[in-house]
Length: 266
Image 1: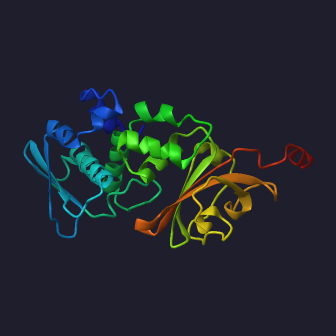
Image 2: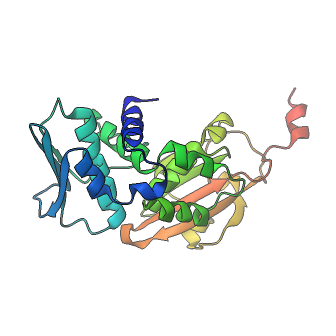
Image 3: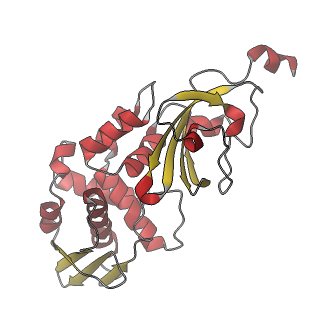
């Protein structure tokens, strides 16, 4: 367990958080940890933490209107308070610094630690991991988890893939190009990989703007790995028009390598 996750678990224990519903009122939680949360205009920043002696103020930009984004920003600054209070008395965080994507390397260690704290705090392993043990992954199910924990779909999907026992992969695309990929451990073990940065295949559900779950050929997604030429997997893609983006969940619901063909290789 990393230190940011340990710190989040420690706070959850000290606050006696017993259910996701206990995390509903983040302003009050921050207050119990010595921080006042306020929202006001900020110049060139999304959030700020100011510490003076044993008190702190978490300021969220009034430009942040999305409730889930606001919650993540508060949890991010709370992470700075819990982890870095003896190193920084002032933390000014840009929009790119506050990121729930563990794949993305911000190049700023303190910001990455605050992001990891926020994810572990808002989507605690003790409540979230048992809900990821489902044999039928889909974005509708993840959306239900996002509503339960009051977190964004993308943040919840990333956490779901992290804990999933199934061979699943989450892909985030912008302008029809793959921006990042997050695989489950089960899929990594199969050594199947998708290259970031490339253009989406024209036959994918993502490009065809279909929100239905549908089988597609594995070779339109996987760039590396062994699988049969006619192997298929399940694709579920949702458009995110506010970001000109597409969120795609892929999972293997059938064998993609014929066992007999595999035996012939030896």
